[in-house]
Image 1 (tube, rainbow, N blue to C red):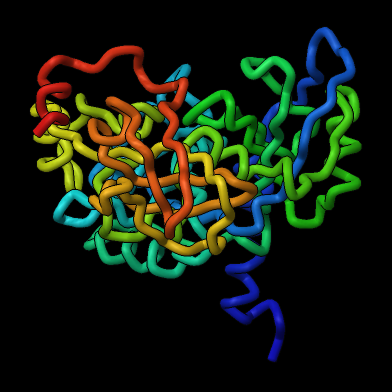
Image 2 (tube, helix red, strand yellow):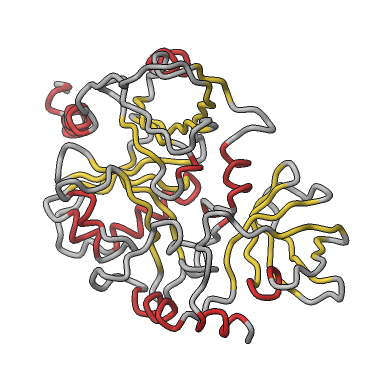
Length: 348
């Protein structure tokens, strides 16, 4: 068979050509060059999905919690945090969306273990829209830069084949970098040589531990599909939900919870006095044995847990996990005060 007549080969070539155009952004060296130290880590548990089509924005607008139209608007953000919900308003997938130079294409980063289900979920809602949903895992890798001395510092884009964007949730979570898969550690660190000196992640300094210290859950293990609501996962505090946009799947309950203020549980960081099984989900109780929440991830005596706010933070009772003490911490990035109606609801 003539190779050029193979439709799969032709499609692969077309995708590769499109790929080169969509993520290529103008080369710009950072101003005011000074040497810095930072940690650079590949995110092996994250995968990129390409969603392409003339109606990509209205398509995603009807599924995601955030206002997707902003990402393609003039002066809009380069990246955006959003959840995809089921009809009951519970979180199915947590994602970060990325703008490309093609207005008909948006890249979506999701948990690798949930990637197949996520793509199936998107295709279910295409109906008659001409929307393509494909993994670009063999083309791009997600990286993260963090541990800057100045958490608000902006990282410039040093290479035309890279896409660089601050984490849309918290500045403390660093900067996301999308790089071609053929750009390994050595090439990537060389690209950022003018910005500073990169060091690899270690067991006591890595992205997972950084998230746990901030109390940010991510992925299907820490945000199990169908188990929590977006506001319990702090989507409202992490710039992940819009209350001004139109309808989307799960919007009714999300809006009702927001306006009523009845949010009894939220994800927050915990400190452990003894290690627990990594990746395990264990109950957090009071000394008397009352159930107060559940741990969804832990590492190096830090973890992230979904806890009852009023019972855990007011009065700071002794907390226990499997017979060992632990401590809940109020994230610094939470609003200073909560509306009165919410405070009353927590006391319920």
